[in-house]
Length: 185
Image 1 (tube, rainbow, N blue to C red):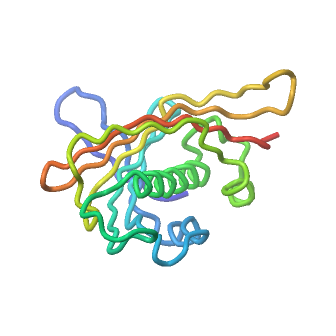
Image 2 (cartoon, one colour):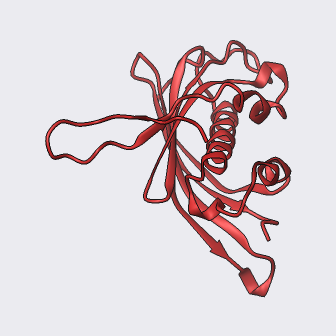
Image 3 (tube, helix red, strand yellow):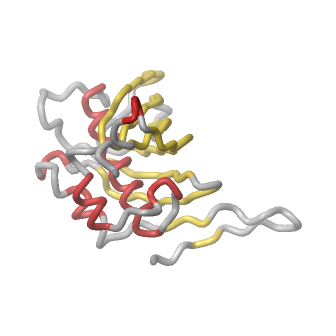
């Protein structure tokens, strides 16, 4: 397991959540499925509270992988960045045992499920102010993670998540995503 850094508050306040720094050995294999010009996630710190996890990330998109320069973060890039942030957050959560919903998973299970079994069931975005895609930050949180067996079929995990992006010039975007982890046994 990694070494979290604990942020402490003065007085009788409880300690803030522990944050795991970017795992430089984990990040490259998490991003392996992406083409070189689509690896936008640069760093990710992860914490967990109450059995749910959050990632704080840094991104850079030097050049769009599919369209001429729009001058701002667009919907396709928001989705790609969300996926990279989510894949890393789930991998780190499995590695560190941060979310009970993934308690039975090993890292081999994560690698086996990463592409075929993690599905976006619903994706929503709110663009508030244009974001500079060359340098911006993001945060993603699991708000719930529940095991379901729809219609007596194979079990699955459903997750309600939220995300937000921002840049140094006040650019803002946020949204909510429902994930389905299928084939989880």
